[in-house]
Image (cartoon, rainbow, N blue to C red; front, side):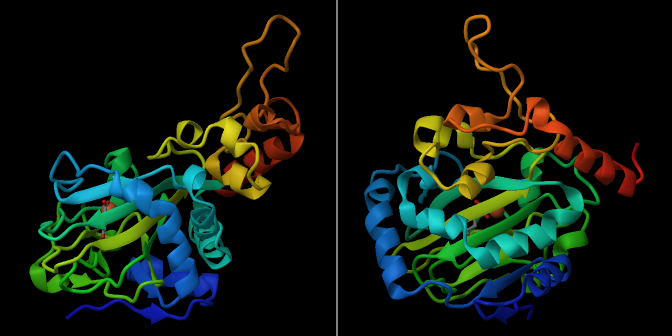
Length: 299
Ligand SMILES: O=C(O)CCC(=O)C(=O)O
Ligand SMILES: [Fe+2]
């Protein structure tokens, strides 16, 4: 039977990236402590309890999906900014971008009776156009234990280079069983899906994913965490949400003010009350973009 590698919470970024390139997924054991889990539950349960079941088979008709976690939960912000996860994401995504960004935050609660989810690749969010690049780095933080019975995520180790059309045989699929506080880390290319919940209690995980800075985010972070909330967050988190240029000229805006009352063509930091390097990002970002084009053979 296939299985996933389990690593300690302080596994080096290069090891995480290497396993994602080959197996497509791994588990970091016991990253969170009981107190962290208690705080996450306290901050998130009111929202989770108030969330209706999904409206289709992919979302899950006995599944709730609750988002906007950066705006709603200070503890979830710590997960988003976890140093080992950010280091792994940077190492894995660096060959394909100048910046990476937050893609989505979502509590996924599989309720008893939820059937297994269609096995898929998360990178299909952008259609099947992206070939030969890894666009995405994903985590599911276990809020409850993940067991075979309660629907631990199904994963197909080694499926990262399969053709999109290939369907895994049952014996090629394993489940990401792990204790509450552990994290499933997986790429946008590995085939996976939610498991079937045959247990008598909910399976809950926090899905936090990251993508290349030049791709559209699945959860619209500017609407889920608008400037009036984002302005009080740490600068590194603001940048991850997308309140900065993704590359030279990528994501600039002009505040729609009367003539002469605001800047033209400036970075989104301006909306949070902070300055930027200059119009469209300034010379430094331009040089960075030119250098990356040269090193990838583009001009
Ligand atoms: O809940 C899970 O275990 C995985 C869910 C998933 O893969 C998805 O919704 O894209
Ligand atoms: Fe998925």
